[in-house]
Length: 103
Image (cartoon, rainbow, N blue to C red; front, side, top):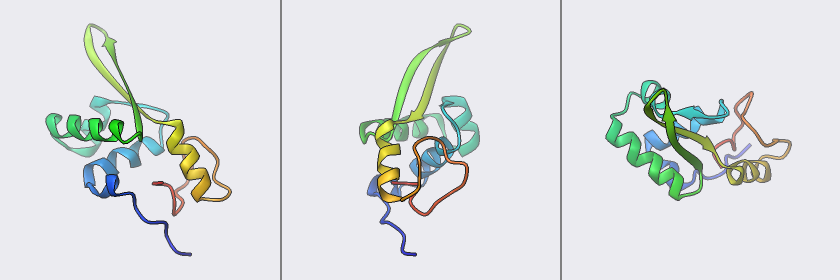
């Protein structure tokens, strides 16, 4: 089965890693993504901004226990894109990887 072409936004290794992590969870905070990717705070912040501008993720900034908290989740647009590219794929976090999970 041929693979769908990878979106140029996801050619960056860190952006692809962030989207990969968000596929398996409903949402993730900045510190979780920082720990799992091993990126620097500055680089992760820039890549999250680029994913947000491209419509891949929704970012919510707030406070938790008197500390700033940034939450990220994949957008509904991302899930509808995946459903269109991968027949049989339903919207929402993946339980298994499919060839078109990156949409």
